[in-house]
Amino acid sequence: MKKQQRLIMRTVILVVLLAALGYALYSNIFMTKEAVAKGDQAPDFVLTDLEGNTHRLSDYKGQGVFLNFWGTWCKPCELEMPYMNNQYQYFKDKGVEIIAVDIDESEFSVKKFVDKHGLTFPVVIDEDSQVMNAYDVGNLPTTFLIDKDGKVVDIVNKTMSESDVKQYMESIIP
Image 1: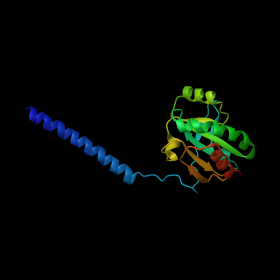
Image 2 (image 1 turned 45 degrees about the vertical axis):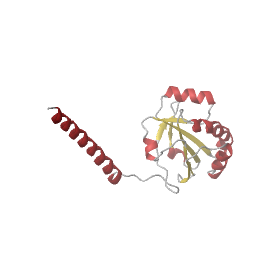
Image 3 (image 1 turned 135 degrees about the vertical axis):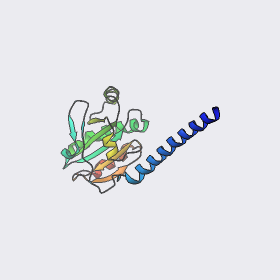
Image 4 (image 1 turned 90 degrees about the vertical axis):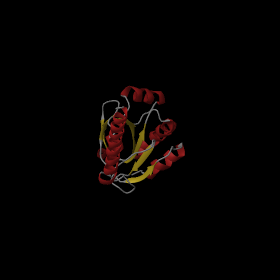
């Protein structure tokens, strides 16, 4: 009796594992999406900032956009935020906008982080990770440099120093 129960249990586990493997293969082969690459048109999105204002990427046509994906728990993200804020003070008058996209965190924790660091650029929350998925963001921080025509000029997958932030912002001045 116990041997029969173990056999049934093992069979059920094997079937579940095979189904999971089949789904993983199917989704990787048939449901692959193209990652956003240099030269691509940046996917449009609409997100709301902490003050309740909506930000649509297409509304920034004619400006350079420094699109930064980050999280409050991400120490490398926290390191570069003051640099971004410093450079934003200079480059916002030159037609470069920062949109910092927090990935799926509570408004309370994001607001606390923004207040702690005195951030003055728009911070939006991607509550369901749709924008992150549209841009195929893996690791944080990731920054997309978007030119005045909405094309991706560069993708930065590392923690930036202040001189890096300055150099990247200079590259997208309209």
